[in-house]
Amino acid sequence: MVLQVHLSTTGGPPTPPDGEKQASRLDSARQIVRAEAAALELVAQRLDSSFLQAVDLLQRLTGRGAGRVCITGAGKSADVGQKIAGTLNSTGTRAYVLDATRAMHGDLGMLHPDDVALILSHSGESEEIVRLLGPLREMVRALIALTGNACSTLARKADVAIVYGPLEEVCPLGLAPSASTTAMIALGDALAFILSQERAFTHEDFARFHPAGSLGRKLLRVESVMRRDSELRIASASDTVRSVFAHARHPGRRTGAIMLVDDAGRLCGLFTDSDLARLIEARRDAALDRPIREVMTANPITVPLGVRVGEAVELLRRHRISELPVVDGDGKPAGLLDITDLIGITGAEGPAGQTPVRPAVLPTARKSA
Image (cartoon, rainbow, N blue to C red; front, side, top):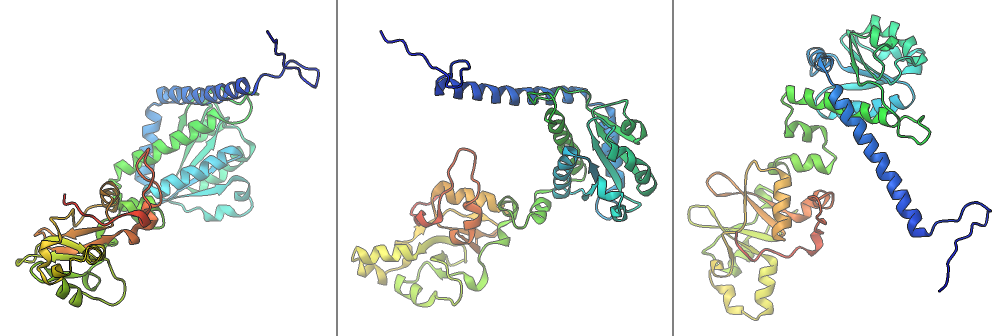
């Protein structure tokens, strides 16, 4: 039997094996996350009517055509303020950040008399914040404090004070802002989202404020991205394959799918360039002079006008298809979604646990819904 002893080259205690060390580090990380989660639960229990007073004040004094939320803080609270301002702006409440130090050297000029100040300070006694309270009082409509100290100068001088109470920082030294900044972020989210609900903020509003983001584009309606009018290839299902391809040609952006309609103009099938290639490869030359309805994909998968882009993208992903017709209330072709137009959306984030499908490997649909 061989006894393995792990000796430290520094003369200290034995070095644990790599496996033990990794497990210990993970345990420490989990303890930190759980400690912050426990702090948030404590903050949730402490919420009281002052939070609702702050919401009512913000709703009354800010919004479209009204004042904005001026957010200020010092140190890590200032960093939290940046995040809260971003969340407010993206959910329908206009906000901006005022640097507490620069404010005393001219940046107070960005304030408007209709604005409301949201002031962040865990202690409520930060020198920069206490010094700023007087000028803010004279230049904005109201002061809202977000602090952990109910007896602080900030809490006492604010019109409304959201006090989340004392929290033990999860930093090993108990010093670095951690649980307190997490609480501020969570409370900022709560303010922003309650306000967005009160203002009936919609998916369309969110998409309008996020035109360059994949999430925003997913919330748009298909009308905003679909091909339409001269970009569509539409033919009668009674025409022959040869005549369809001879006449269904268009300049400019070209889709690989032809939408086929019945005598009433309703969509009844789909035929693609890939379908044509398969006929030729199989040497089915006779089929080229037969009605295209005999070889088309009958009753293809479609979406109606008004569907969100995200839902359409999910259909493309789930059925592994490259083209998706958009139909009006009468079942007539109104547009077409082509996978090549949605690369920026499909290539971003997909549903949880799923790997996004790359457009280059999507085959053309051969099955009806």
